[in-house]
Length: 452
Image 1 (cartoon, rainbow, N blue to C red):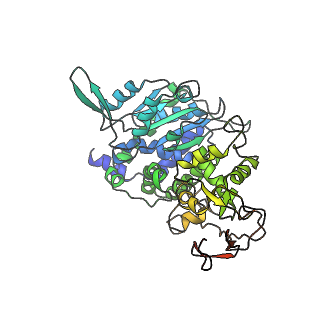
Image 2: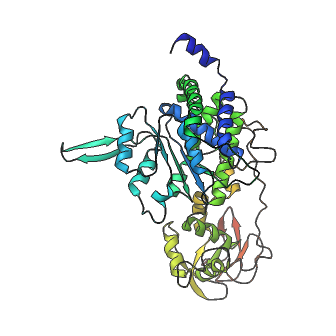
Image 3: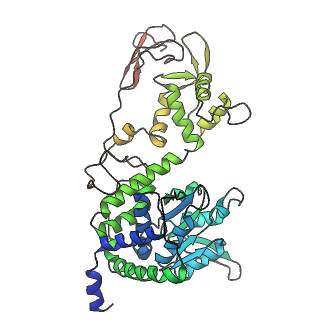
């Protein structure tokens, strides 16, 4: 690049350029929210700096029905992304070869009608899903044995990818993606028709300017370590987008972080947890403040929740004591024999046996933030005034504060000791001598009864 070109690139205002990209996309597509628009623009820009990233975020564009604009948005990505490779049905071997031909500068994969690849009638397509999952992180090549040369071939998988389709994508893909949930336009929402011959040159000119600006700052992007409002894989996915927003400046750093928080929260609200995680969370509700409960009581309480799946699953008959034990065994939680206050003896569970598992797999907001970090793969929710347009600065010091959770007590709570008799806070009765038990720092102390 000549000195004149360098001067021109240095004179580019990154925030204005990203605003222009957003405005051009808005001519042809009605996006569901400001957060979605921010994510799409930053993802497109990130395709021009793929060599700078350790993780290649996916862009998932999904809709509940046809005619929601998902394919048109993918057309925008096709016109503005770096080295786009559009396909509606590709074999894993073809995708492998497309990436492997230029591993240092891979194409941007754009897969339309992805529901025909991953939908319920399309089979599992584990090879393609494995490629997309592995290609999210640099240095995860696939290995193939070449019988002709009797050697193992290493094929690169790292590349940016966008998928558009009806319905949810596999959870392993959405977990690595910025997910845009499109919706059908109303009569009051109008867009300009997109015609390739007429409009593609406009996108191409903008793409060239975007590419020149991004590639002029590859060193800065490679070394960027943006302050992230997320943790774990969500942070890996959003780090390139937020790094680009920080480079652009203006309102974009705030917009990017707000978009990350908003879209992750929306995805969690729309996605049901796995059956096992749902069971762990529901067991916490079933315990209430009880310290131990019979297996049958837990199952009864789980099945009594009309909004839970436990009354119908597994069919027929719903959740059983045996099925509960099988599901919890994966987390090293097993029932033990207990003698209850009414003199009966049966298998049951102790609340303390769940504590570590709850903290690891389904922590409450209070549990997660008490350790000083964001909830893994769950952002702190936006707070009052933290608008999607970035009206409140985000510098890491003003994370949304979580509301205080009042201390749980057993007063007036039926069945906190496995019976229908409520217990006082921090108090229970010995099953042998019926004297009060005290609890100090989570340990049971009972000096008067050796059998307690």
